[in-house]
Amino acid sequence: MSEIKKTVLAYSGGLDTSVILKWLQDTYKCEVVTFTADIGQGEELEPARAKALKMGIKPENIFIDDMREEFVRDFVFPMFRANTVYEGEYLLGTSIARPLIAKRLIEIAAKIGAQAIAHGATGKGNDQVRFELGAYALNPNIKVIAPWREWDLLSREKLMAYAENAGIPIDMKHKQGGSPYSMDANLLHISFEGRHLEDPAAEAEESMWRWTVSPEAAPDKAEYLDIEFSQGDIIALNGAKMTPAQTLAKLNELGGKHGIGRLDLVENRYVGMKSRGCYETPGGTIMLKAHRVIESITLDREVAHLKDDLMPRYASMIYNGYWWSPERKALQVLIDHTQSCVNGWVRVKLYKGNVIVVGRDSKTDSLFDPTIATFEDDKGAYDQKDAAGFIKLNALRMRIAANLHRRK
Image 1 (cartoon, rainbow, N blue to C red):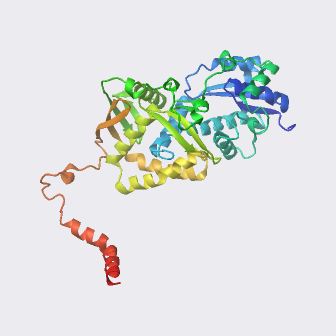
Image 2: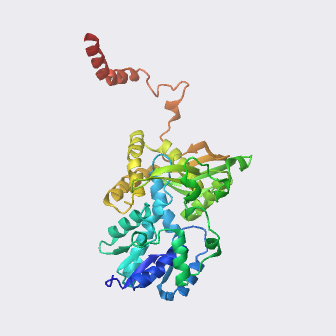
Image 3: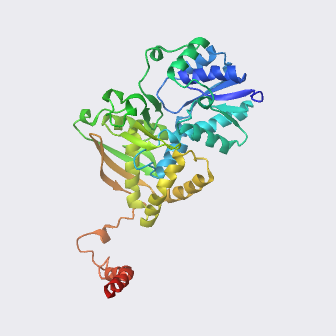
């Protein structure tokens, strides 16, 4: 412990990380530097600065960074170019934020000469893996402190008692029990775990949801949305050019209004257990649907199928913390190469929890040829007799096998 003189802590200002800050000072006797990332969680971050100052952190050792544009541009958008979904449903809202936070922790550690970083992820969860794999990939010599794997403060009551004994200010919401859920939020999603949700048979309470109305309470009138793509990324909504962060924020607003993007999921965690969580990803749900639609008319068939084959593996890389791995980077090069032709627009209708596609076009890259696809007279554009030879060649192996079995 004596070799660690300075540590960068991923700090939210909440109960857990406030206790960790004090615990690091008491246990490791080191100087603590706090880092708070604004990735669109929708909370006022200046209170985190005030709390850190109250706990003796020097002003120059408090880092609060607005990373919303970088988050969407360099992490969310590349992930959605691959149409990434984990276990068929989860849009990886928590997973994709961790490599960015790890990257910034390592950058700050290098800047201020820290020997270690620290995080508040528990020993049961996935985030410990994501933070630490990212950190070691970017600095193999960094020390990582994970208090939940070291201390004995393994309940909320013990955390509260430690905070009170150490003179750490406790918000009224914590004294009154706080939220019944463990929540994580960023521009892509908000997640809910714990308490009531630990019974997978129990329906999530309507009062839990924060970003979306229920489909039943959504407007009775559908809303149309035109989404413009350039090289696989959204660049405009209803003709209005937007930055990546602005785009996702607007999609969240529209999707939430129409009850889009709720998910109740039991997922397989990295450490082996099954975990039930609920998620709201309104903007991401719209984005994923629209991206697949624009690809449907611009991507070659076999390229599209290859992407679909690779996507589950890509999703597992992100879920399991391998964003900075050589295999994820290599796969990203392939994915991004396929996106050079993914240009055009998609029109969707938002209604009662649904994203309904009503149109799409690409004036420069569409592979849809109406003269060939038509059910009317194609004037010789497609010779239907060609299909006979194709079918016979593909049936040859099955015909040989069938004849063999008939002779037996």
